[in-house]
Amino acid sequence: MARLDINRAAEMEVFVRIVDLGGFTAAAHACGLTPSGVSKLVSRLEARLGARLLNRTTRRLTLTPEGQAFYARAARILGEIDEAEREAAAGAAPRGHLRINSNIPFGMRFLMPLIPDFSACHPDITLDIILSDTVIDLLEERADVAIRIGPLRDSSLMIRKLGSSRMVVVASPAYLERHGMPDRPADLASHKGIGWTFPRTIGGWPLQLDGTNEERLPPTIARASDGDVARMLALGGIGLARLARFHVGPDIEAGLLVPVLERYNPGDREDIHAVYLGGASPLPARVRAFVDFVAAHCTLSDDA
Figure 1 (tube, rainbow, N blue to C red):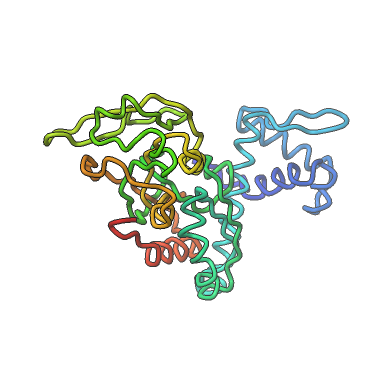
Figure 2 (figure 1 turned 180 degrees about the vertical axis):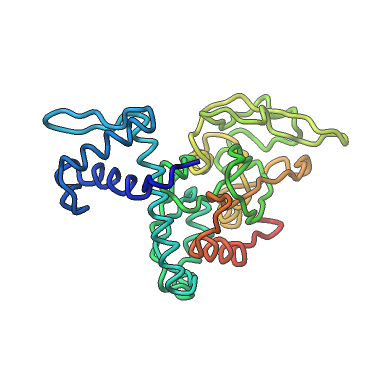
């Protein structure tokens, strides 16, 4: 248990100021301390933690790996302290800054259209919206909420299911004109498939044949780093791709992609979740407001 005579929040604030402002002198001015006082505070902090946080030279400061981890957590804790004080002063009304991360196709099709209405309902919440297919570390990226597609690996995160989307094998009309329409799973052996540059929990494409499930995979012509790249390759006619229906639904409706082997589709779905940091402390009102809003308005239909 922490000693009561140690003001850990103040230590964190000074340390974060050192990193943000790039030096002891600037941090000392910002915190109303002397440079020597800041230096002694860091030395005491490092001694108490038993780890070096900063590499010091006459010209610059750099973070050690331990310092980088401490800085990331300290910055988040200080932000939560500020948020707690703002919420208490305002009767816990949703306000403050919210950093959101989503993959590109879900973000463009479902999330972005909701933002104007969310902002109208919560005008005191400001937003950072980052669309990327890279799976981020919420703590390192200082993100409040991330949208994750597929299996969740980090059990320490709080989750809220937003929906699910049926998987479908698709190809462009140009590809099917050149290679023909596969009529049964065995036909995949003579086709070209679009795979992934990262490991998947499922090795092949699940298909249902004579009442039993099996996995088939066409020879791979190209590998994609994310769903949007796979979609673009399929639209370009390079091969067959298996993607979530929400990802390619507009392309199917426009006739740009054609579902393939639907009679053998086992109907498996890919789950979509909002994930966020949680724990024993109350969830910030701004995070709860956003997650509740998206869960209420971003419903996926059975065909999505």
